[in-house]
Image (cartoon, rainbow, N blue to C red; front, side):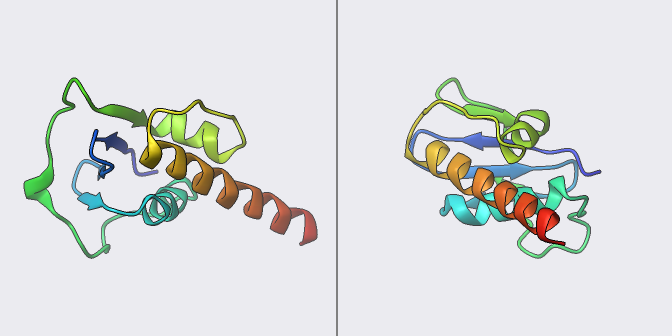
Length: 107
């Protein structure tokens, strides 16, 4: 499984970072979709859009989301708000997880 972390900056941006891949998102739904793929076992090895120049350490005003916390959201755990992008990402990732659960029940 590809380990990752996400940085949410105070301007609404989201940065996904793995060991070999880095991508900045303007849309939380796009980030949630990619995170859901990673949580389902995807690898970034063949993903387009690698932006290695964007890789950075967490700033004091950033919120960070680890892979384990993202898995909890995907599995239905509720998280409190920390800004519009953070909240939208959480809603989108939780919705993808619910769709996964519904598909499994109906399979």
